[in-house]
Each structure stands twice: as structure tokens, then as C-alpha cells.
Length: 378
Ligand code: SF4
Ligand code: FES
Image 1: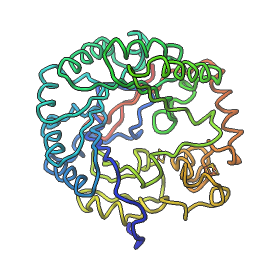
Image 2: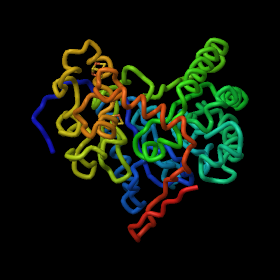
Image 3: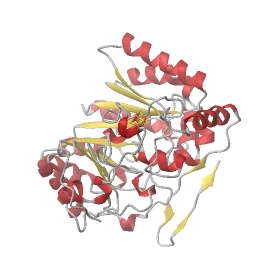
């Protein structure tokens, strides 16, 4: 599991603490694994508190408390308090459904710095269908008001795809109405559940171009009122993004069962063995675990990345996408025009986005204690 390689990077910037995979929603682009571990595999409170304090000692500045739905953990307040005591900036990434005004107040008193609330669409019918939960949208609007009433800063986070992409202007208006200081418009990424639902989610290139123009114009128009982050989709790109800021360079993910991962989808890569917080410190994992050093930097790269002048800009793109499309995590990310699979990827996106979308395949939690998955389509 470990190599003798010396650390080649500074400490990670942030910890993505996936507290649980439990979630009341069933979004078809969820970044959680297809095989969801039950709650019995989750780390106990003292273990998480130790992880948070290790993260601060390692030099991390922030923790993103995520899931699943992190508020499904009854000890969320204690974890926020522990993170704050350790000196970490705390960001809660939530569906909002398990929060109310009193709990938000307790979280704020515990030291919570910021809330990132997901919305699935600007109108309730579409939003509830995407979330797989009737009434979800109305509850999110109420909780957004509660977040603002507690004085916590709010970011609205929306994943766009062919079912809601035409309503990005309305989503921008919604962010303003709800008093968000920031809106993240992120195109769906195609690994995990997103890959399983790709044909149902991919927008057309025309839809993408219209949305990009709309976001760029809104950014100008709303300067000083609303910051809009925009995450482009890879399937119509010519160059990949630096996924996670580069493998093992900026982020650590701790999964609900304690596995320490370079990205949330890393477990899809065969042959990587991941350390676990039950046996390994975050510092050791970061500096020595093969799972972190394998694709860190540029030594692992073959051609064309090895001699490309973008190799220290995008760090070779996304290893999980290379695996999903090219069948090997060592391959060039097919989002890159230098990949032999790039044209095929573009053609696939154009073909799938032009055909009627199939029904969503909704994520579902394994039935606790029975080891079976109950998965539903629309
Ligand atoms: Fe990035 Fe490699 Fe493509 Fe160059 S060849 S742009 S390093 S993925
Ligand atoms: Fe794993 Fe991009 S999602 S490297």
C-alpha cells in the first residue's frame, strides 16, 4: 500500500469529509459510488473528531462536510464544533431536507461558517423529479430562508443537464431571490451515477453554448451582487480540467467508512489500495500511500502528456474518466483532443444528447443489514 516516495507537494488545502452516504434524495448524477455502504460502516464520532484535528495539524485550512446528506448524522453539531476547535473553516454541503431553523442555529453556534445548499431546478415539478423526492423543492426554499435568517452565508449549488439547462436564467434569479452570495452552476460529471445516467443527462452542444453565454453575461451584469462559479462539462471540451486540482495535490477525501481517497470516485480504479483512517494517519496517507503518489505530479505520464506544455496545468485531467472511457486510469483523459478517443467521445455526446432521454436510474441505499440494493427507475 505504501511506497517510499518523498512528498513532492505541500499539504492538502481541504478535507472533503463524506460523513455518510445516507441521503433522502436520489439524484441521478450523484457522485457517491454505485455500491453504497450502509450506515453501520460509518466512522464513530471520536474517530471523525480525530480526523478533523489531524487535518488541521497537517496544514489543511477547510473542511467540506458532505455526504450523502451530512445532516443525517446526529453528531453533525459535535463534528462542526470539533472542526472549529481545530481551526478549520467549515462548509456544510447539504440538500437541506434534514435541517430546520433550530438545527441551523445550533450549527451556527457550534461554529459553522458557510452553507452550500443544492437545488435541482428552478421549478418544483422538475426539481422534485430530479431529486426523486416529492416536495423537496418547497422545503429547500424554506430552508434557504432559514439559512439566511440565521446569518449564515449561503451558496446555491445546481447541477445542470438536459432536463434543467434551459432554466439557468431562472436559477440565477432564484439565487438572487434567496439571498445567496454565490451560485455554482456545474454541468453534470459522468462518473458514478452520472455515468450510469449519462444518456438521460447529456445536453446538446447548442444547449451548452447558450448556457455558457447566459452565465458569462450574468456574471458581468451581477458583479458585486452574485458570484457565479461555472463548471464546464468535459464531453464537449478540447482540453480536460485539472480534476481535484491534480491527483493528490490539493484535496483529501475521507469516505464514510474511513477510506482515505484522492477523489470521491477513486475507488472505481482497480489495483489501487486505499489507506483507512482506522489504521493510517492522514499525514502518512498523503505523503506515502501508493494511492496518493501513483498519479501525483507528472512522472506517471506517458505520451502525449509527458511532453505537453499543459502537463503541470491540468495534471493530465481526470484519472477516473480515463478509466471509465478508455478502460485504463493511465490513459490520456479522452476529454483531451490529443486522446485517440476524443473524437469518439464527442460523437457519443452528440449522439446521446440527440436521442430521447431514457428514464433516470435513481441511486438507492443498500438495505441495512441485508446487503442488497434496492434501485429504482422512474
Ligand atoms: Fe493535458 Fe495530457 Fe492533454 Fe496535454 S496531452 S492537454 S497534459 S491531458
Ligand atoms: Fe477521480 Fe477525476 S474523479 S480523478
